[in-house]
Length: 71
Image (cartoon, rainbow, N blue to C red; front, top):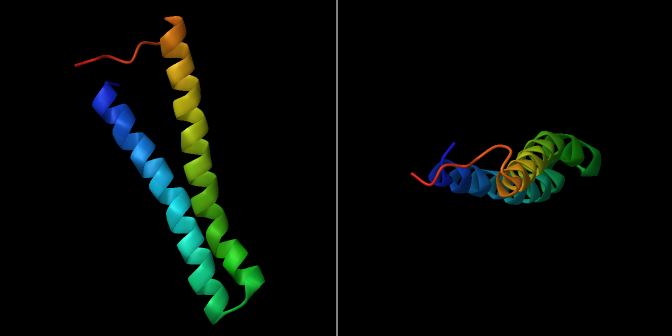
């Protein structure tokens, strides 16, 4: 993975989290709170999971265990 890929994945992760709030808001207007939370959950989990992976990857890169190339 190079730095450009890392930044792109970070933007995707943040976009997923932001998108989940829009999904919850609009779905809550249409069908109710419970269904809105169910519709939001996969997006939040995917975005948060990706952010955790990127954090671990950046930490390992800083420690020199798993490098992120600067190509």
